[in-house]
Picture 1 (cartoon, rainbow, N blue to C red):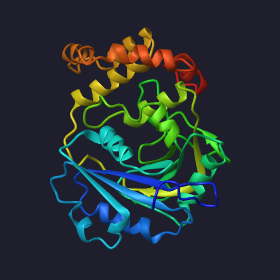
Picture 2 (cartoon, one colour):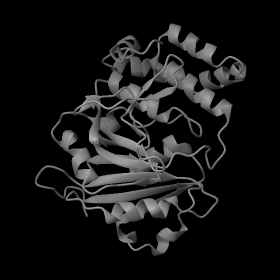
Picture 3 (spheres, one colour):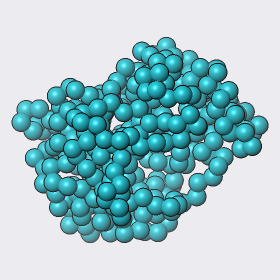
Length: 299
């Protein structure tokens, strides 16, 4: 399919992007679920094999739907940059970023994209339920006073969310490119979904939940790859320097007390973060006070 194909003269090709690292059988099961569901919207699939060591993507060479799948292999760039690499190779006017351990329902793409196509939002997430405990469902996320994630409760109809869960959300190509995609300076895993959500809101874009669309997500107790406290701390502080005022940066440093901050901060400052901060502050429509007040986050 070529970029520009039209669905009811409204929606172009949708690019569904899956970063994968040491996912075992999950990648195949996720794709089996995806291709078994119905949709009237044409889509392509992009798998970013982010330096897996378990051969979880090897089956793609002979997979039955291989003609609709583009595979990118990296040496291990982390979930944030893996998603960016997938977007760079995407042909769609809309992107759906998904974890590689999901199950889908019929017409989920069509119903999730509908508010985007109607210009009611710029980025949207479905309800996300636990694959093992299906009554456990989250509806987008917000932040606690310690900047940890808290799932929203259901509301009626389309509603705003402070944070788009990285497990599954759709976004227009225009909005994604305008904010520069996911943070390119993050290392390994941590805060990538929070950062892009804050950036979208501050730059004047809208993030919503469509509670009537549901995907199932495999929640794991630990990552199938190494994640260190230093990496997560670095990402948090990078997010703070990118978007927060000086008072909130100090609060973030207090949250990281005992986390090797004396080495993390100098490394961050050498990375060009202050220039990025200046560029973001010039471009954004709202400041971080507005964001935290809007969502009643006491931080």
